[in-house]
Image 1 (tube, helix red, strand yellow):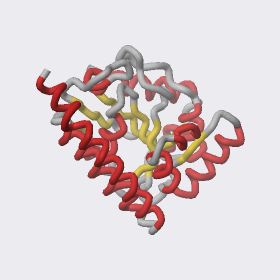
Image 2: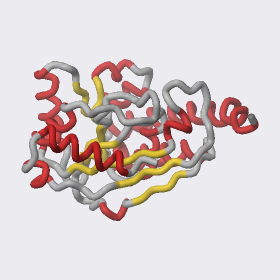
Image 3: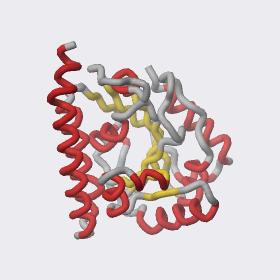
Length: 235
């Protein structure tokens, strides 16, 4: 009860204010074309601050498997509302999100996403082709892309079957895939929850699958392999 009062009265107002400030800073740094601020340092600070504000402990495993100069496609399970700040705060890597077109309509945050040139994708083939072209132009020299291949947050804590689009993009772009397992986010703040619960979160970075290994597999087998790897890390 004490934590819930703290989260309502103190933590959430601080989170809203910090998110507003960060969105404005991202718009400014995007206009100045300072990608390292836009896609790494500012979001990283926001992610870390989020968990400091809400007093939520986080553990990360496997960060040493990532090369800061290498571009990747990060594929993670989607448990709850805190998955995005979790990845921003603890991956310590520059990356863009592949996100649905309708997210542009989010107040201020959608504007910040457009200014920062996140990779938007719709349902049409033309939209997917455009997303692939945008990704090819920007994903190099350590700039990566993050995707939730389930397409939405889980309803019960269990993983949802993956959508093919993320893997078709991965094959087209030709970057290594890094499976990531998120634990605890469903318990802390699931899609049905009305408030936060304080619990341990963890981020498990699995061994990257090289672009050569990805090219050797068809889309279905690659989906199955990544799904099994991510699921193996679930508590």
